[in-house]
Image 1 (tube, rainbow, N blue to C red):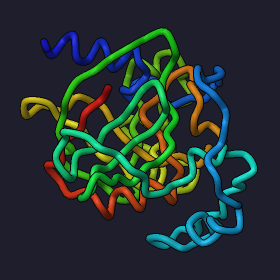
Image 2 (cartoon, rainbow, N blue to C red):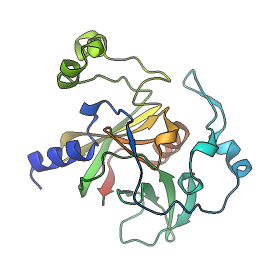
Image 3 (tube, rainbow, N blue to C red):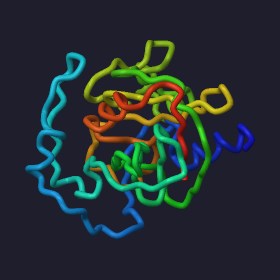
Length: 221
């Protein structure tokens, strides 16, 4: 896959953060039937917590379909253990584990009508990352100039579009500008948004961050 095609596909699909991870929603394309599970069973997973000096609020799970709550599932696959698999049609991210299992997370993705598939590497990760909107976005939204790279970007925090963690994806040794990251807008999980990267509930991206080392393989299908 050519670099230009790779980046074009990511931009169209809404995975490159040039778009600023905005949240105009569109309905997803599959059944809304939920997996079994009760909110009480997941309160510990999605409860309020302090992380890196920031106070993460509890997630209102009534606004997130059960199927997108984090859980271990059966996941027979030819991908080796440790591979991160993002399925753009089901809005699931799977971390492949041993014995045919995977940790499954719900994600929010880019606009419908675009498809991309390919491999990458999680080159490096950041806790509570800084967000710097690109010049193209600032040209459209001049009020974002205060967060430009020239001004040091938007500091980490609860309102930062990259959330509590960001995983930076490379291909052939080069930054693709593709990020997997947290988001305070948990109600967008399982939905298409007008633009943005692969977004996760902050509590989930923290869990993924702790499980995935640098140089892990990423597959988008």
